[in-house]
Image 1 (cartoon, helix red, strand yellow):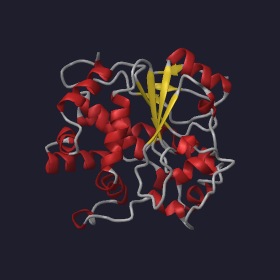
Image 2 (cartoon, rainbow, N blue to C red):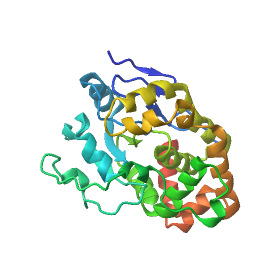
Image 3 (cartoon, rainbow, N blue to C red):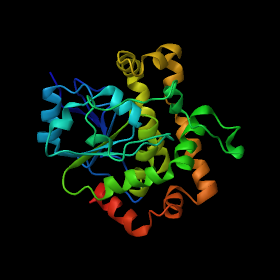
Image 4 (cartoon, helix red, strand yellow):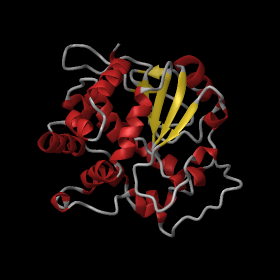
Length: 277
C-alpha cells in the first residue's frame, strides 16, 4: 500500500526518490511551501494508489519530464498520462539528433523508434568546455546541461512558474542529476541558501540502493546500472556545491545565470511566490 509523507519524502509504491521541495529554510528566515513542486525519479510504475495520492491528496496537475525522447518512447506510457487533469511537459536536458515536436502526442505503438546505436551515451554531454575539463564527471555533466541545453532548463523553470493551481512534479530517470539541476535553480530563486540546496540534492543518497535496483529492472536502463557500481551513481554533496560555486564565480550566482538566459526578475518573482507564498 502507498504510505503518506515521511518528512519531505513522499513514499510511493512505484517510485523511490520522490520528495517535496516544501519545508526548506530560506535566507530571510522563511520556509518553502509544501505541495507546490515535487521532485522524483521515473513515474512509469506508479500504482493506482500512488496516482490517487498524487492527484487527489497532493493535487498534482503538471508533470515536467526531463528525459530524452528516446527514454520516453522506450519506457512507454505511464499511468499519469491517462489522467485528464494532469498536463505533461517535456524538456530534454541532453542534445538530441532528432526529436518529436510534442513527444506526448506520439502514440508509442505507432512511433518509429529510429534511435541511434549506443543512445545511452547521451546521458553525458557530448562536448565539454575547455575550462571545465578539470572538473569531476558529474560536475561536467551538470555544466553540460546548462551550457548545451540552457534553453530547456529555462523552459522547464517556466513550466513550473506558470503552472497555475495545483502541484507540479519535475522528474527524469533517477531524479538526481537532471532533476537536481532544475530543482537547485528553483530553490535558489526561492531564496534557499546554497548549503540547503546541496543538502536537498544529497538526500538521494539515502535511497540510492533501491533506486539503482529499480532502474536496473528496466531494459532501458539495465545496462548502465549493471556496468557501474552503486557508488558511481551516488550523488555527492561536493558535486552540487561545486556547481553552485561556479555559478557564483561566472554569473554572480544562479539568479545571474537565469537572468543572462532570459529568465529575468519578473519571472523569478513569480516562481519565488509559487514556492514561498
